[in-house]
Length: 167
Image (cartoon, rainbow, N blue to C red; front, side, top):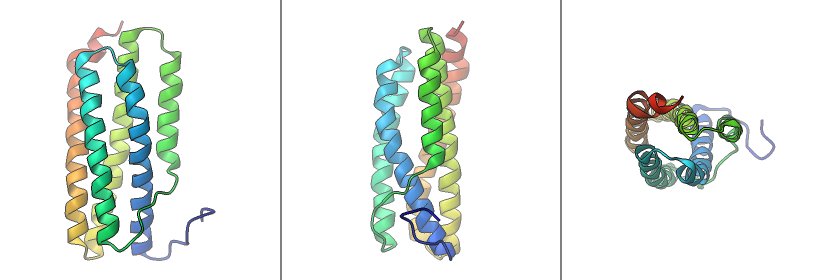
């Protein structure tokens, strides 16, 4: 059990904890994306990051809505997985000298983030449905749909532009 979290004894406890986890993760992403926007040299990649920043801000609002719907205070718990993904991305970006390779590295890091988010939202939706909270599941589904669409856009951008430009 974490130092500041309560014990997880029920599926409802796990749902709330996972909600807090993704809330923290989404907030960390909003701190990292502006740095990636500033470093991106491919115009489509830069635009993709800008679009995802706006989407992430809306996703945070939806998560806050789910907290309210479920009668829980809005708060995050440290997500070691997201912290690790973002730390690895920062380290890799600092090791890259070529701007086109840097774009490919940032795109790759963004996809790692997307894949984590997709797993979390899928899990939250399954928990919400099991708990009889279709209302929460419907709101979370909007976030999941956006994450999957972003992942597809990033894959297309990698295959058609960014990875091809890297030496």
